[in-house]
Amino acid sequence: MGKIPEKLINFAIYNDGNEMLGAADITLPSLDPMTDTVGGAGVAGEVESPVLGHFKSMSVGIKFRTITGNVTGLAAPKAHHLDMRGSIQMYDSGSGEYVPTPVKVVVKAMPKKTNLGKLAVGKPQDSENEFEVVYMKLWLDGTEEIEIDKYNYICVIDGVDYLAAVRANLGK
Image (cartoon, rainbow, N blue to C red; front, side):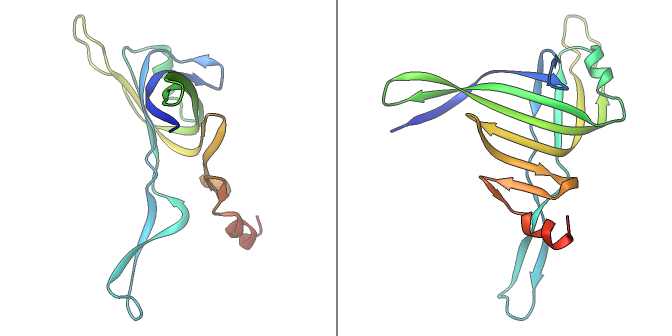
């Protein structure tokens, strides 16, 4: 039958590809296409038509247990290169074994919000950073699945670059 994805075994997050940022929970970006309503003659009603390769604001959130230099350093008003590497537990129904499978997400993102959290005795501070994502690339089991680069007109999904013709039309 194949491999059945079950859960994320664990992950690590790095700044600039080599500085491990510590214990955190991450909320990955949502891919919401920009749309506009198309209607009128020739259309039976209305259609929310996506703009090819264009996405609404994309955010990534990182929640740390306590305030650290990582939390404050990520508040710097510049683009940060964040590298999230994980291992997904897949169950191979043929062999009956678990197969750890790599997943990697890289983003280039600028800070939108830094929440230093709360102070409560014996409790996590829940410090959070939120970023605007301008570049994202996702690999699953070594295969590039998604690449979105808003400033360079790149939108690759499942091996198809949906903005290649747009770049050519614009002379880029």
